[in-house]
Image 1: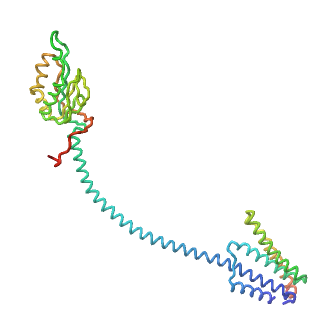
Image 2 (image 1 turned 90 degrees about the horizontal axis):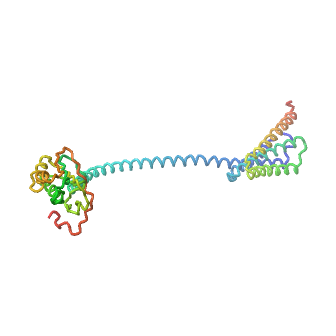
Image 3 (image 1 turned 180 degrees about the vertical axis):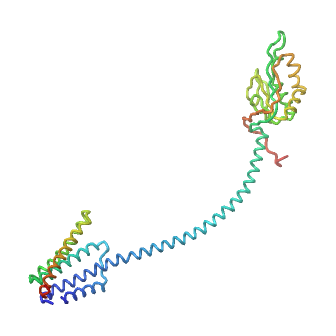
Length: 243
Length: 114
């Protein structure tokens, strides 16, 4: 222990150095002391999130059960909807709003070619009444769907004369007219041939005026869908529905 | 020598008991200042042993060292060279060990260990 080291300033300043060391140490300790806190914070966060996950898993299970229940309900509703869809489809089919294919007959009605001199040319032509007769005969034979040159014959379809053309569904058609009908082809054929009005076309008239007419049985006939509108002005559904 | 160690221990104890700290952002300042103070004290011990010690030079050196160290850290922060404090750390560290070597050799000589 040598004497010069006992200088008061040196002692005091070294004391200050010690104090400063402690201050730095304190600060550092606090800084690092904070880290375990942060770590424990993170641990808390993790624990909370795990708890949340547990809750969410329970909720997920609940929701899955609900989904299963709803799927069952939906399945039964699907049944109801299917029923409605089927009814609508049937209604559309009956209303003529769908294209039809099936066995049936095709009736071709063409004007006669050689008009004999001095005779009425009208006799050599196919008239709206002829087409109407054929259509009616086909319905008699049980036709389920009929079109004329692609114009579907529905409940409100008029067939009328318009000069040299025929209007079907307000559509102007020119000959030759092809009437397609789906149904029992034999029954349809017989109905057309034996019809009092239509039958004449294929026998005496054809022979007499050279009409280009024919009835063919087909295993596959296509009938177009009704493309027109349907806007009843006076027709209102009866109050008791089916009246 | 024992007095100095006791003074150091007293200062540390006092500091720990009062539990005074600086804001975390000032930790670098505190550390470099401590290093500067340590350097001053070691050089003070050395100059004492070499009989060149003067109170004024010692206290002045202590204060300027500490302030300059803090200033260097501050400048480093300001000009975006945060590592500038390393300059102070290295400089003071080298000086600490230099002075420590001198102190050691002087004391060894005095005690006749060499």
